[in-house]
Length: 364
Image 1: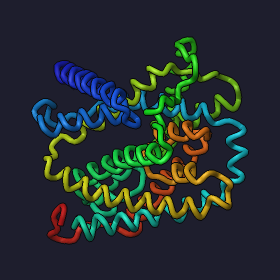
Image 2: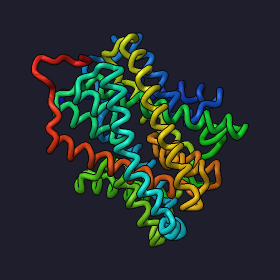
Image 3: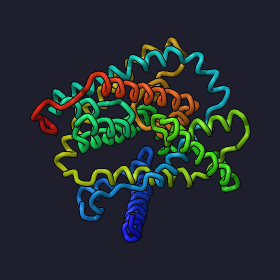
Image 4: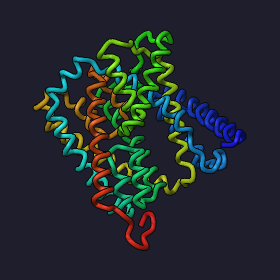
């Protein structure tokens, strides 16, 4: 890459993160759930859509840059995996069985929404409706002939709607803010920079593991596994200051918002309506399964609902903290959901041969 192109990419990325940070601070002040991620995402996405010339054509945030901050969140979640959490999973077999049934049911429900209501072609409807595996859905969808713009938009809207509607709904139900809006954080109390070298090493190892092993959501899951191993063995004490994880959420949210480049308001408005139907149906399905599994596991209904909701791992973990539940328990269920979703996509992609019909157009 030419020097001037690298410089432009660096300046653009820096500007996007700064603008996103301002949006995150505003969201924090007004009490939005997951304020730094949602605030930065909403701010940069609005600017991207309304001022398309503000971002260079074909802009994409440096992959390694994003991987570093995603890895930080993975490490923080992995540090919550204790022996107590692993032992508790023995009683969670019914919830994992429920997830095994829930994922394909959510996929079927979403396919009906995007195919029958939205009128998307079959591959676009299928990959727009996967209840997880955002990156894999975009990659496999594009390879199968799906409209990459629509798949990307719907997957982003799924995450935005879930991590907004669920904590807001639970906050209204409980009568007080939950998650990051309630002051919860994945950062260790009193975490400073004393363990920064160890954190950097663990993160590098984790990101490398995710890539080499081709793990689903590898940039997150790889560091999460390494963080869990470090915590369980006691080799390294993982402590992160709150501002570091807030910055990670701002970077992730800002760069996601920039992905809306090239989409117009009408397209996004239509996609938002479909996403509302899709997310609403998934949350209803999750409520039903949580009610069925609750007597079998002894876990509270709300904790199971969080574990079954197809949203962001980070915010679901923060809400779990608000309920005095270990976020690692919730995170393990979300990792299993992602694994199931990616497996379902892989089988469908290779064996069902989801392809466009001759002469079909995106959105037909």
